[in-house]
Image 1 (cartoon, rainbow, N blue to C red):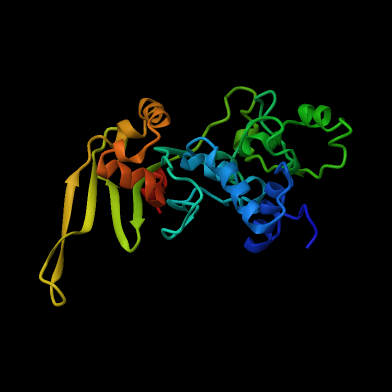
Image 2: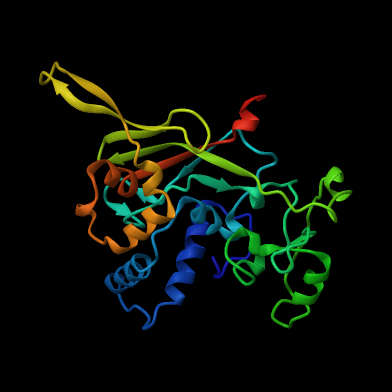
Length: 279
């Protein structure tokens, strides 16, 4: 297929081809063999800062599909495949996930002036900020930004503003909609472990569950599971913890349970307590 791809209706393989095409085109000098291509891409990916899970959603750009309404639960699979391939050596799960810009009928904020957005232009992704909030514009900013010769051919779509909010848009700020992290599933080879939040809200405690913490017997034996509290999880996911991780390059300095959380994360699970009350 031709590159770069422009259609938002691509299948996953076409999106992967489009993504790789952009990465390869940016390599300097251009790779002359598969080995040079692999090394070049690994250098680019390894030089990126430690990603957090909400940045992974924002990085999807125009490949992101919108939700019709706030889901009670949302599962996000991390960019890794088994033990052989990890796009990032560490991933920090965000304690709260802002899903405002992936909701179809939710009010959104103009990426330039902050007023209520009326249009979305996926081709402007990353030009007026970072993430999915960079593609929303009010009428005035849409006209001004797209009068530039580089953006005159951009195709925008009109956003749906809920009628009840349209009446109040000049008197109230655009609300942000968040989901909270309640579980992280981690895997190393075929050994799954899980971090689970015991309750709701910022002060709820966390525990670590290992279904294969110990074993009794050999071939006909059985695994012995274990559940232990993990009070330090909130610190590791805080700004202070992230600053420590940026300076600690060697994973061996991390406590064992913390290393499992940050280096082996496979799936992050988020919930909306308000929606779960009635759905």
